[in-house]
Length: 199
Image (tube, rainbow, N blue to C red; front, side, top):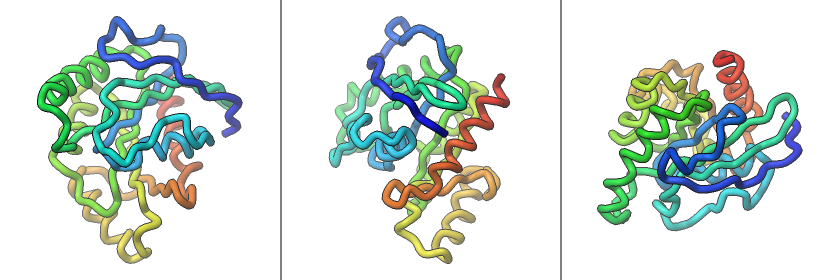
């Protein structure tokens, strides 16, 4: 993957405010503080493109980025993190409809990278997101972040538990570390496979 440029397009809540459909889109979803921003930044080789925050639940809008690259260009969509208890109640109420509108109706959406922390068993919210993706026929790319925190034996144990919990084969789970950049190429390969499948 040779990336020429990645730029922020806009933030949106409602479908009327989404940018025009001109490139295929890959969205990124996950719990607050799961490492979503760090994953996107490593993928596009830009340290501060997507702001990382020590305060979970900070991203409350759908953020669109355009990436020009070889062999393909696409839009990357940073979806709001979920599952953080201190997010105000009115924001939580808006979150579900906002996510469903995007997942159900966005014509250019080709797949969703669902990010899970390898150290944690997927939560009910993670499973709800996976169910949404399946019900709207959106292909999930499941990425397990923070894999540098575990030994090989611990990884194998967690992969087996997560695979069973989400109902996805172990070979379909992609391991990633923002620290060591392990798995970056594998994530891009999974994204490219989904784009080729969709076309």
